[in-house]
Length: 176
Image (cartoon, rainbow, N blue to C red; front, side):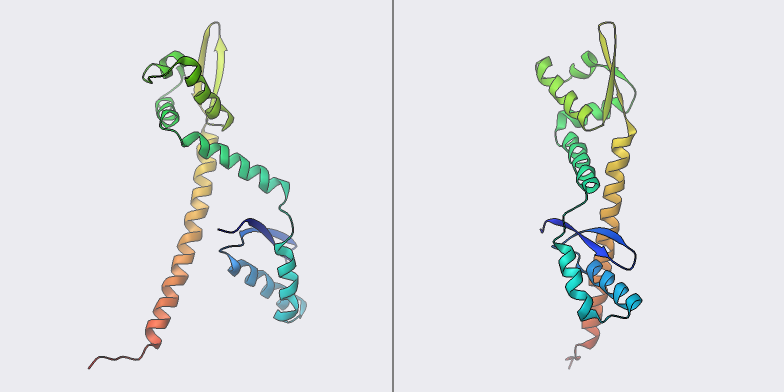
């Protein structure tokens, strides 16, 4: 898959993130919108669009992607998924969270650190007891990204279905 770059939609003055390996439809749409609004031809604006593919990503996209990376990294291990599942029922002390797992406490604490870094949990210490709580923001961010991907792929599959139906209609009927 290609690296993520941005497409500049001059008509709207916005940078649209896209995956250059798969989403040239957005490039064509941005180019067509600019050509229509400026009176320029598609070929004149196509070179402008191609230059925009080489421009660097804004820092906000990088930080957002890094945040998603840490969120999904938290889900990448069965121990961490079990901790999230347990915390979904309510807050728990670290000793209770560690009990069902066959590992040393320092190793388990590394898992909690990954979950805390990813935004899945927060902890507070009262006396000698550290209690962990689930933070819904990480799940909401993951759900939002997955929803965007679902919509993107549904649209792509709908276009593929329409294209295949169009090709099927154009084929001569060879039934005898």
